[in-house]
Image (cartoon, rainbow, N blue to C red; front, side):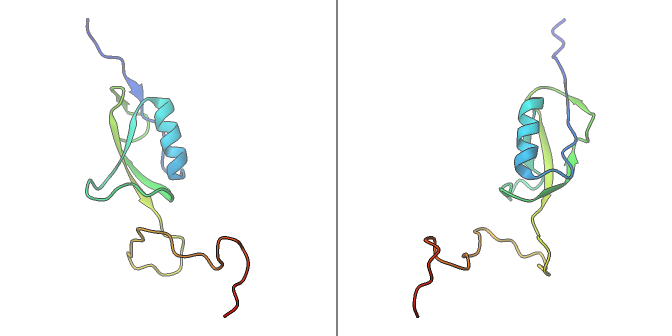
Length: 97
């Protein structure tokens, strides 16, 4: 009596952030950053989640994920808040120096 319906936490590890959001939406859970002081990046691969896949939770339950955004090349824990400028201007034409 009054027992709330439970939903299954999907496996999010190994997915792109956008895929994790879609899967979470379909599963009726909410993906949140593992670190409350750091917003979720828009791209990267999910490397950890809590609670783990297969756990039954209430609908709209937050599932914390950790995201690896490094694409190789050293890094050293540096966080990019904005993407670096592209190699050419938006029109694709080279501007004479």
